[in-house]
Length: 564
Image 1 (cartoon, rainbow, N blue to C red):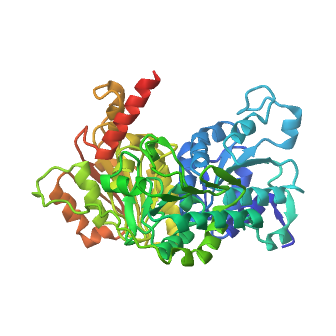
Image 2: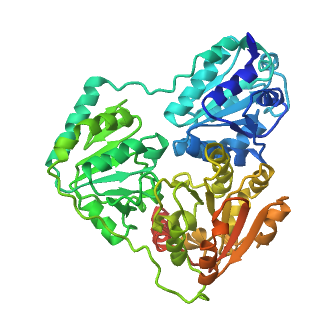
Image 3: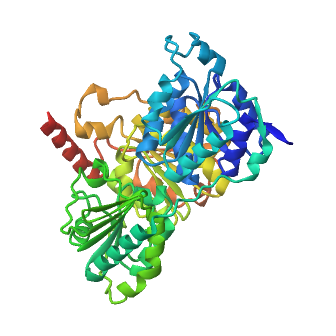
């Protein structure tokens, strides 16, 4: 095979970087491209219910495997996906957005084709996407196309941001040399400038040498940019007390004796707040300092000795070192830090309450009880997805087993994200380890935005756990504003019929409303095995919410009121 089509070349390249499920929808400008997926062994076309869900799914898939791909059609399809693409951009998630566009000749003639704005402008949607893409490519010929495809895949992976790739319909069937596939895409990071890196490490070591009460604070980009192992080594060598943010949950081993809990500014547990804010040095790894991730920006460190490790720069106190990637810095720092910390006397870390008080089995379920209890059911290797709302705040109170991944969209916060992300995560998990459990917690309101993607999971025989928190509407919104307002109400669904409605054959639908029913479920060995898709409806009071969400809602409401 001396030549292959450009379309097949794209999918062979994706397969080489372990992207084996492609999300999206068919449209007339991408149909010839989609034909080529089936020519590559091991590749799967997911086929989604809509493009927004497909973008959410690609996001979830990428968080598990490091890269994802979504294919949409020109105009109507690509615009439907943009909310999900924007969320991936905001939250540092690498994905390739491939758009099937009209042929080169149609563009040259400025034909008034369907899916256009009727003005002959075929680049307008590309320009829209450029604002939420790390880079873009609009392929013009088959000669340059393979290099552009390789560049786009590399940029999406290395920078962990969306990349836009437009492929004209007439080019995907043109032939390119198959030998191009013999050279792997270079996914390695560029080396840091050696003198700048040395200065960074020397300065950090000086700060550590002078510190008596340092802490490590781990945030989302530690996971997104693959420095979890380097961070683990830093914790092991230094024995500094370690904390995560809500977005960083799952980035470190929460069973480690030096793990102290989740820091959310004023919303933190008092012992956690005191431990972090009284530190005389903060080593912050991968920070994304959004309002919900910081308790409405309520961080109040008592020190200016803060080192921020980022994917594209390092900040030490008020000095910024651009272009210095934290992966190499952490690797080199770990090689030389041991002598500097040998005299450090480990400070005690907070020990949060993890057990619920004994309760009568008939006691109705509450958020506070649920989020403490569910941690004992989790097991090592689980992927836990939480929706914007009560779930994302409640999971902060749960202690994860080692090697548990947390997925939530705390920064972008698009309601409904988690159901699409569940499809992507469970598709990726199936490719990595079929025994790995993928568990979703979603509110009854959020579920209604993206529920169709459950049918895609059923189509492919995927076996996630879907916990639907039924609190009769948008509780997070009610807490912020409009407790009795009709706009926070939803039409109640019969959740027990959902899996059946979407055509499931091997499934389980359950409802729990009290402590006894939940405990019985959590202790059932058969329930612990992910051998079928399951929907568990958890009945909760309307205004019941985790304590930290109640406080966050009060902060948000006060900020909104002040802004008016």
